[in-house]
Length: 568
Image (cartoon, rainbow, N blue to C red; front, side, top):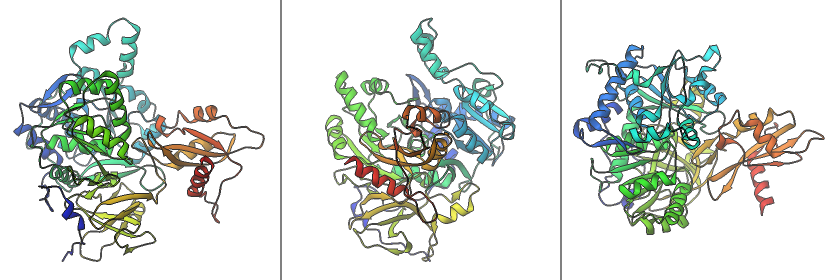
């Protein structure tokens, strides 16, 4: 018999939010298929003004699924996606899932080295990628070669007029077009994949317990690992999010996808939650305040998931352009701390709410959020969602609970919590605490928090040394490896330092070889081919030596403390 842990947060829920929800029984594909059937005539996707209805999207998914089946994709196969936010991303995602295959999401701005590591890990033989990424994958060595590449020209989803402007024989048009698309060879064009007949209903479908996606995360430390998330993990998290906003009726909302959908945060709130709500999903291939404000003028967002720097830039741009933000109803912030200095002006300008939440890739990702109402509590990450249990424990002995208000490690369990890392049983075992009450095991978040008597959680620090900059995870060891390859660097420690713009910034402390002087630009340039731009250190500082443990391990926490002290 399962015994529920105390749940003081239930009394702090907003009006209409249930203590528990009934978990979905179907798959993610069933979720989107339901919206296609119920809201067929409604606009599902908007991209630079071009629109796609739910019925049209459903037809495209069925054709893409059949095209993939004819290429040999079967249930349980891996299919890699490396796409920006665009209509083809949503269609490809659900087409893969329709076959019971597994989506592996990738950042299309990753360097070839970063992409290669992930492809080596999951071994997908088919990839659907932005045409700007094709060359990087075609240059993989033979042992990780992808058999079939499907290339996507995102400009084909733009309105005809916009596409025509991109073809004008002027420098600015050429530059814009070059940033969006490029010519490729040796691939199957996305438009050709959609030339297939719709998939037949009797073709095998996924089940709730099947793996739906592999989401790469740096986890606690080290190189990125693939978090295996089931259909149930993701449909449950979408259902929990729907329950959190009972005031919003399905089929009526507008969601802005400014967050990249290859990131767990953007994936759940745009690819799954928005589709389950029958929302109009407005897609932005990258965050551009001017593009967002142009849509705000016509159709303000019901939901705007983002990170604090985006809200700050939108407010600044709106002031400069004299654009009203009134009508943006619910802004949901995550991935980094949200300060009152952002919340207060945002809510004054929009007349809506800006609430902070919390989650991890391993939890699909949302674990908790502030109430969407007057009981929200600034400075906290809110309350556990329905069907979610949390405890605060001694980090050195996670079987011992800490009393309310006392700092400890946050451990969690719920239907959105993953079952493990792809092909990494040891790393999986290390992040779970066996249950003694008949319930599921507890996942160790690696975050130090406090839980007050009303159930609100505040994040204090991280046990893990992961750096979160601009909402993206950076593994220090990956950056250190790239810097250490430079012949002038003897040793290096990479840490996250506080930043008013991005939560944290990547900072490297380096020990230079005898007789060598630090040249920050040279070192930065040396790693740009191996690291995505957000991983390249913003600052590089020369030090005489690095603090180490008795076994020679660099003590990053002490490095960070030293850098903080020297900055005072």
